[in-house]
Amino acid sequence: MPTTSRAAPTSKAASRRPSPPAKGRAGRKAPVRPVRAAIPVGLGLLWAAVVVAAVTASSLLTVAVMEPVAVVATVSGFRASRPARPARARRRARNRPPVALVAAVAMCLMVPLVALAGPYAATAGLTVGGGAVAALVLSTGFATSARPVRPVAAQLYAGLAPMVAVTSVVVARHQGSSLALTLVAALFAYDVGAFVMGHGRTPSGGVAGVAFGMVSVAVVAIFTAAVLDPPFSASRPWVMFGAVAVLAALGVRLGGSVSGGERLPALRRLDSWSLAAPFWVLATALLLHR
Image (cartoon, rainbow, N blue to C red; front, side, top):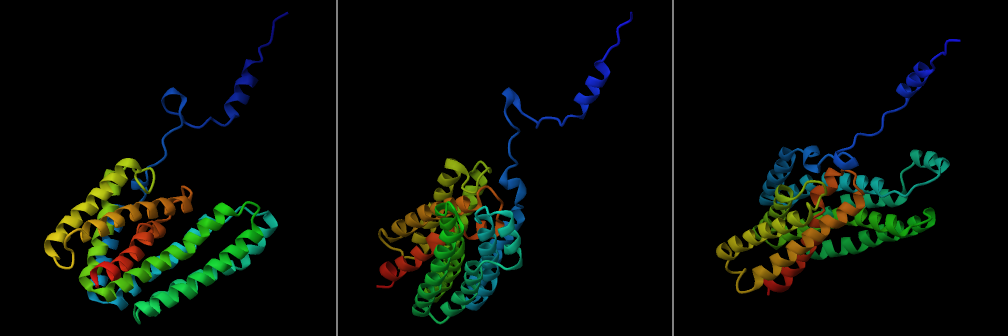
């Protein structure tokens, strides 16, 4: 009797199966799309130009330019660091935003405006506003998450870092327009150096990105020591700019841990400022205004 072939149904079934993900050489997965391909360079240059113009003009314009970006950074950081919840809890959360997020956005809007009154008002605003946001994040985070340490730490950074960054720039503008522009130039120099020479897969740019970011800050320090002497005399520029370079890299690292690989452009604009800007204000008060 003639034998019947069953190869055709088998091949049809095999053709219906989903194809495996594309892999590169040696069975490795295809490389992730670089960050620099997702974020247009022109937006970063436009952001730098607008901030420099605002800081040069006035403190009020500085708040008007940087505050919306800080609010978007706060909201996106909260959403990216939100812990996983059951489906029922997610449906209830859609109708109302978290109390900690509402408080963080409100303080992000109010505290930089309070800082327009001067450094003492800014200190009081940061103490009260930051304390309120931190208390709400800690209380709600530990109550709603089974493993709260990482999401609570990320939400603390997302709720406090943008507010502190903008407020610090406003206070630096009160200390002197040239000093504020020097801070802005150093931080933008770090961001540009890390972006151009980094590997592009992470915000920090890897070892090469961090190294060239610090070198860029050193170039700004040399120029500042040559032009603004005094107050940048003796070892002062190297102490201040060296700490700014280290703190800028640490701020970018913390911002990257909040995003968890997700692209957050607004938070990326301010992450290098979050630690370096308040240090600059304190160092200016202690070292330069004596």
